Image 1: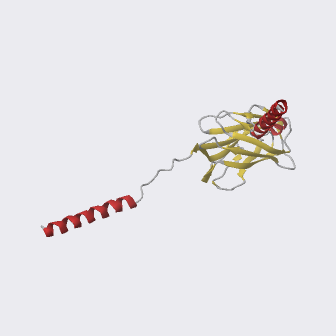
Image 2: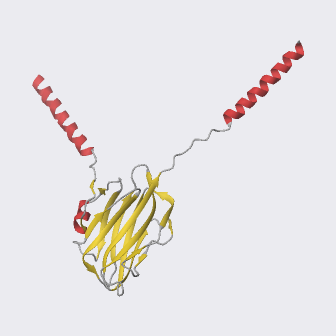
Image 3: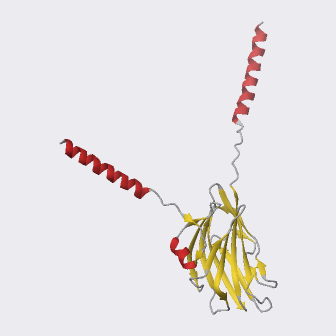
Length: 222
Protein backbone atom coordinates (compact mmCIF):
# COMPACT_ATOMS: atom_id res chain seq x y z
CA UNK A 1 0.00 0.00 0.00
CA UNK A 2 2.80 2.40 0.86
CA UNK A 3 4.56 1.67 -2.41
CA UNK A 4 1.36 2.24 -4.38
CA UNK A 5 0.68 5.51 -2.58
CA UNK A 6 4.21 6.71 -3.26
CA UNK A 7 3.91 5.76 -6.91
CA UNK A 8 0.57 7.56 -7.15
CA UNK A 9 2.07 10.68 -5.59
CA UNK A 10 4.96 10.57 -8.07
CA UNK A 11 2.56 10.33 -11.00
CA UNK A 12 0.51 13.27 -9.72
CA UNK A 13 3.68 15.34 -9.17
CA UNK A 14 4.94 14.51 -12.67
CA UNK A 15 1.60 15.40 -14.23
CA UNK A 16 1.50 18.69 -12.31
CA UNK A 17 5.02 19.52 -13.51
CA UNK A 18 4.04 18.84 -17.11
CA UNK A 19 0.96 21.04 -16.77
CA UNK A 20 3.06 23.83 -15.29
CA UNK A 21 5.57 23.64 -18.12
CA UNK A 22 2.86 23.45 -20.77
CA UNK A 23 1.01 26.41 -19.25
CA UNK A 24 4.08 28.64 -19.13
CA UNK A 25 4.13 30.94 -22.21
CA UNK A 26 7.32 30.95 -24.25
CA UNK A 27 9.43 34.08 -24.23
CA UNK A 28 9.81 35.85 -27.58
CA UNK A 29 13.24 35.58 -29.14
CA UNK A 30 15.42 38.64 -29.63
CA UNK A 31 15.03 40.49 -32.94
CA UNK A 32 18.16 39.70 -34.96
CA UNK A 33 19.21 40.51 -38.51
CA UNK A 34 17.93 37.77 -40.79
CA UNK A 35 16.20 37.00 -44.08
CA UNK A 36 12.50 37.63 -44.67
CA UNK A 37 11.80 33.90 -44.78
CA UNK A 38 13.64 33.18 -41.51
CA UNK A 39 12.05 36.12 -39.70
CA UNK A 40 8.55 35.07 -40.72
CA UNK A 41 9.20 31.48 -39.63
CA UNK A 42 10.58 32.64 -36.25
CA UNK A 43 7.34 34.43 -35.29
CA UNK A 44 7.33 37.13 -32.60
CA UNK A 45 10.63 38.74 -31.61
CA UNK A 46 11.52 41.43 -29.05
CA UNK A 47 13.96 44.28 -29.68
CA UNK A 48 16.37 45.90 -27.22
CA UNK A 49 13.80 48.52 -26.15
CA UNK A 50 11.03 46.01 -25.46
CA UNK A 51 9.04 46.43 -28.68
CA UNK A 52 7.70 43.18 -30.11
CA UNK A 53 7.63 42.62 -33.86
CA UNK A 54 5.99 39.92 -35.93
CA UNK A 55 6.25 39.60 -39.70
CA UNK A 56 2.95 38.06 -40.81
CA UNK A 57 3.52 37.85 -44.57
CA UNK A 58 5.37 39.36 -47.53
CA UNK A 59 4.47 39.62 -51.21
CA UNK A 60 6.79 39.84 -54.26
CA UNK A 61 9.89 40.43 -52.13
CA UNK A 62 12.70 37.89 -52.41
CA UNK A 63 12.60 35.53 -49.36
CA UNK A 64 16.35 36.18 -49.05
CA UNK A 65 15.93 39.97 -48.78
CA UNK A 66 17.41 40.83 -45.41
CA UNK A 67 15.81 42.51 -42.38
CA UNK A 68 17.82 44.45 -39.79
CA UNK A 69 16.79 46.26 -36.60
CA UNK A 70 18.12 49.43 -35.02
CA UNK A 71 16.25 51.07 -32.14
CA UNK A 72 17.06 54.03 -29.91
CA UNK A 73 15.27 56.36 -27.50
CA UNK A 74 11.57 55.56 -27.89
CA UNK A 75 11.73 54.47 -31.54
CA UNK A 76 11.65 50.98 -33.05
CA UNK A 77 13.14 50.76 -36.55
CA UNK A 78 13.39 48.00 -39.11
CA UNK A 79 15.21 48.13 -42.45
CA UNK A 80 14.87 45.80 -45.42
CA UNK A 81 17.78 45.43 -47.83
CA UNK A 82 17.13 43.79 -51.21
CA UNK A 83 19.29 40.82 -52.16
CA UNK A 84 19.13 42.52 -55.54
CA UNK A 85 17.86 46.07 -55.97
CA UNK A 86 14.10 46.28 -56.49
CA UNK A 87 12.95 47.29 -59.96
CA UNK A 88 9.54 48.22 -61.41
CA UNK A 89 7.18 45.25 -61.28
CA UNK A 90 3.64 44.53 -62.38
CA UNK A 91 2.52 44.14 -58.76
CA UNK A 92 3.39 46.02 -55.58
CA UNK A 93 5.83 44.71 -52.98
CA UNK A 94 4.14 44.31 -49.58
CA UNK A 95 5.00 43.62 -45.94
CA UNK A 96 2.35 42.77 -43.32
CA UNK A 97 3.52 43.00 -39.72
CA UNK A 98 2.50 43.77 -36.14
CA UNK A 99 4.26 46.02 -33.62
CA UNK A 100 3.51 46.14 -29.88
CA UNK A 101 4.81 48.94 -27.63
CA UNK A 102 7.03 48.12 -24.63
CA UNK A 103 5.37 47.62 -21.24
CA UNK A 104 4.08 50.92 -19.85
CA UNK A 105 4.16 52.68 -23.24
CA UNK A 106 1.85 53.45 -26.15
CA UNK A 107 2.50 53.79 -29.86
CA UNK A 108 2.87 57.47 -30.73
CA UNK A 109 3.55 57.79 -34.48
CA UNK A 110 5.10 56.01 -37.47
CA UNK A 111 6.96 57.02 -40.61
CA UNK A 112 8.89 55.49 -43.52
CA UNK A 113 12.05 55.89 -45.57
CA UNK A 114 13.47 54.91 -48.97
CA UNK A 115 17.06 54.68 -50.22
CA UNK A 116 17.99 54.78 -53.90
CA UNK A 117 20.21 52.12 -55.42
CA UNK A 118 22.71 54.19 -57.39
CA UNK A 119 21.10 56.55 -59.91
CA UNK A 120 18.82 59.15 -58.33
CA UNK A 121 18.20 60.67 -61.74
CA UNK A 122 16.30 57.58 -62.85
CA UNK A 123 15.04 56.05 -59.60
CA UNK A 124 11.39 56.62 -58.66
CA UNK A 125 9.35 54.89 -55.96
CA UNK A 126 7.11 55.28 -52.92
CA UNK A 127 6.97 53.30 -49.68
CA UNK A 128 3.75 53.81 -47.74
CA UNK A 129 3.01 52.31 -44.32
CA UNK A 130 -0.68 52.12 -43.43
CA UNK A 131 -2.38 51.17 -40.18
CA UNK A 132 -5.18 48.60 -40.05
CA UNK A 133 -6.94 50.61 -37.31
CA UNK A 134 -6.64 53.88 -39.24
CA UNK A 135 -6.29 56.11 -36.15
CA UNK A 136 -3.60 58.30 -37.70
CA UNK A 137 -3.51 61.80 -39.08
CA UNK A 138 -0.91 62.77 -41.63
CA UNK A 139 0.88 60.98 -44.49
CA UNK A 140 3.37 58.20 -43.85
CA UNK A 141 4.50 57.59 -47.43
CA UNK A 142 8.13 58.15 -48.45
CA UNK A 143 8.33 59.33 -52.07
CA UNK A 144 11.79 58.99 -53.55
CA UNK A 145 13.30 62.10 -55.05
CA UNK A 146 17.02 63.01 -55.47
CA UNK A 147 19.35 62.87 -53.59
CA UNK A 148 19.74 59.27 -52.50
CA UNK A 149 17.24 59.15 -49.62
CA UNK A 150 13.60 60.06 -49.01
CA UNK A 151 11.83 60.38 -45.66
CA UNK A 152 8.08 59.93 -45.30
CA UNK A 153 5.66 62.09 -43.37
CA UNK A 154 4.67 61.54 -39.75
CA UNK A 155 1.44 59.65 -39.08
CA UNK A 156 0.34 60.33 -35.49
CA UNK A 157 -1.97 58.21 -33.35
CA UNK A 158 -5.04 59.79 -31.80
CA UNK A 159 -6.02 58.07 -29.59
CA UNK A 160 -2.83 56.20 -28.73
CA UNK A 161 -2.66 52.41 -29.08
CA UNK A 162 -0.49 49.77 -27.45
CA UNK A 163 -0.21 47.65 -30.63
CA UNK A 164 -1.05 47.89 -34.29
CA UNK A 165 -1.04 45.89 -37.55
CA UNK A 166 0.69 47.53 -40.48
CA UNK A 167 0.97 47.05 -44.23
CA UNK A 168 4.02 48.50 -45.97
CA UNK A 169 3.59 48.92 -49.73
CA UNK A 170 6.54 49.57 -52.04
CA UNK A 171 5.84 50.85 -55.56
CA UNK A 172 8.89 51.12 -57.84
CA UNK A 173 8.11 53.07 -61.02
CA UNK A 174 11.59 53.77 -62.33
CA UNK A 175 15.22 52.73 -61.89
CA UNK A 176 16.13 50.69 -58.81
CA UNK A 177 15.64 50.99 -55.03
CA UNK A 178 18.15 49.49 -52.60
CA UNK A 179 16.40 49.48 -49.23
CA UNK A 180 13.42 50.71 -47.24
CA UNK A 181 12.85 51.57 -43.59
CA UNK A 182 9.88 51.66 -41.23
CA UNK A 183 9.92 53.50 -37.89
CA UNK A 184 7.40 53.24 -35.05
CA UNK A 185 7.80 55.56 -32.04
CA UNK A 186 6.30 55.21 -28.58
CA UNK A 187 5.70 57.35 -25.52
CA UNK A 188 5.06 56.56 -21.85
CA UNK A 189 1.45 55.97 -20.86
CA UNK A 190 0.37 59.10 -18.93
CA UNK A 191 -0.14 58.53 -15.23
CA UNK A 192 -3.76 58.94 -14.11
CA UNK A 193 -3.89 61.66 -11.45
CA UNK A 194 -6.51 61.12 -8.75
CA UNK A 195 -8.64 64.23 -8.20
CA UNK A 196 -10.24 64.49 -4.74
CA UNK A 197 -14.01 64.45 -4.89
CA UNK A 198 -16.17 67.27 -3.53
CA UNK A 199 -17.91 65.14 -0.89
CA UNK A 200 -15.26 65.39 1.87
CA UNK A 201 -15.09 69.15 1.42
CA UNK A 202 -18.87 69.53 1.49
CA UNK A 203 -19.01 67.33 4.58
CA UNK A 204 -16.49 69.52 6.38
CA UNK A 205 -18.46 72.69 5.50
CA UNK A 206 -21.72 71.12 6.66
CA UNK A 207 -20.12 69.96 9.91
CA UNK A 208 -18.72 73.43 10.61
CA UNK A 209 -22.11 75.04 9.92
CA UNK A 210 -23.90 72.60 12.22
CA UNK A 211 -21.44 73.10 15.09
CA UNK A 212 -21.87 76.87 14.82
CA UNK A 213 -25.67 76.53 15.05
CA UNK A 214 -25.33 74.34 18.14
CA UNK A 215 -23.01 76.86 19.81
CA UNK A 216 -25.49 79.69 19.10
CA UNK A 217 -28.34 77.69 20.63
CA UNK A 218 -26.30 76.98 23.76
CA UNK A 219 -25.54 80.69 24.13
CA UNK A 220 -29.26 81.50 23.98
CA UNK A 221 -29.86 79.33 27.07
CA UNK A 222 -27.11 81.00 29.11
